[in-house]
Amino acid sequence: MTPILPGATIGILGNGQLGRMTTQAAIRMGYNVACYGPDIAPTPCGQAGAREVQGGYDDLAALAAFAQSVDVMTFEFENVSTAATEVASEHIPVHPDGAVLHTTQDRIREKAALVDAGIPVAGYTVVHQASDLAGAAYPGILKTAQSGYDGKGQRLVHNAAEAADTFTAFGGVPCVLEALVPFLWEGSVVGARNAAGDVALYPLVQNIHTNHILDTTLVPAPLASTELQASAAALAERILDSLDVIGVMCIEMFITDDGIIVNELAPRPHNSGHWTIEGAVTSQFEQHVRAVCGLPLGSTELRAPAAAMANLLGDCWPDPDFVGALADPRVNLHLYGKQTARIGRKMGHLTAVGATVRDASDAVTAARSRLKSTH
Ligand SMILES: Nc1ncnc2c1ncn2[C@@H]1O[C@H](COP(=O)(O)OP(=O)(O)O)[C@@H](O)[C@H]1O
Ligand SMILES: [Mg+2]
Image (cartoon, rainbow, N blue to C red; front, side, top):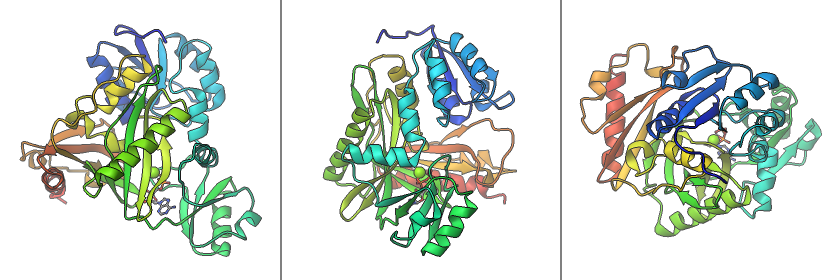
C-alpha cells in the first residue's frame, strides 16, 4: 500500500472518545481529521480538532460524500453496514476493511471465524429460535449476536425456560448461548497490524469489570507468567493474521486454569489500551494511525515497568473533585468532553505509571476515590 502521509486527511466513522484520542494522535503527527456520526457538534472528536460531519450511518449518499472528502477511512464505531463500508471503499482505502467489521460485529460470525482459526472459545450454541435453547447446557450467558456492549444485550440464564423468556425479551433476534467460563481473571491484548503484515502487540493486561463495565486495567497483568504472556501474544497474532486486520484490534480473553479462552474482538483502539498514552513508547491511537496509513508500526515497549488505568464514569458526576484527584503528581487526567454525565457513561479516565503494578494501581484508584469524595 502507498503510505498516506502527514498532511492527508483521515476520516473516522464515529465521534466519541476513541475517535477523540485517535484525532489527538493524528493531529500531533500532522494529519487532518474529519469525523462522521449522528451526534450534534461539538462531539468529543470534534472538540479535539476533527472537522465534524453530522450524518446517519445508513445515509449512503452522505457517507459517499464524506469518503470523497478524506484520504483514508477508519472507525471508532464499528457497527456499520457492509453497504456503508462498500460505498466508502469505492472512493478511498478503508481500514480495517468491511470484511473485518462484518465478522466482528456479529458474535455468531466472530466465533465461527475464531474456531476456523483454531482459537479456543467458550462452548456455545447458536440461537435463531427458541427451540435451539432446549438441548443446551446450563447455566449459560445468552447474548444477542449484534449491538451488545458494556454487558448490554446479555443475561445469565439458569435453564431453558429462563433462556426462552430472555430470548423473547431480547426480541427474538439471533443470539449465542455461551457456557459460563470459570475464569480466574480477565485480560486483553491490544495489537496492531499494517498492510505489510507487520504485527506489534502490547502485553497481556488484566481488566477488572464492575457491573460489566471496565473499571481498571493493570499493566502488565500481574498474575501472568512469561509463558502465559507468550501464549496470549501468539493467539493475538494468529487472530490479526487470520482476519487480515489492518489497524488496531483488541482481543478480550478469559484466563482459566486450563489456559486462555478468547471472549470477543474489537477492531479498533480499546478502553483497555488507554494506558498506552503514557505507559508505552507508542500509544494505541498513534499505532492505529500508523497502521491505517501504511506507516511502519511503533514500539510497544513500556516506558515504565508498570501502568494502571481507572475509568471515570458518569457516576462520579455532577461534582468531581479534579483538584483532589490530581493531588498525586503521578496521576494523569483524561476527559472526553461529553456534555452530559449519565450513570455508567464513560466520561474519562486516570492513568499512572510506576515501578510496580501495585504502585500504579494504588495511585489511580486513590485518585479516583478523592475525585468522588464530595458525594
Ligand atoms: N461465557 C462467559 N463466562 C463468564 N463470564 C462471561 C462470559 N461472557 C461474558 N462474561 C462476563 O461479561 C462481561 C461482558 O461480556 P462480553 O461478551 O465481553 O460483552 P460486552 O460486549 O458487553 O463487553 C465479560 O467481560 C465477562 O466479565
Ligand atoms: Mg467485552
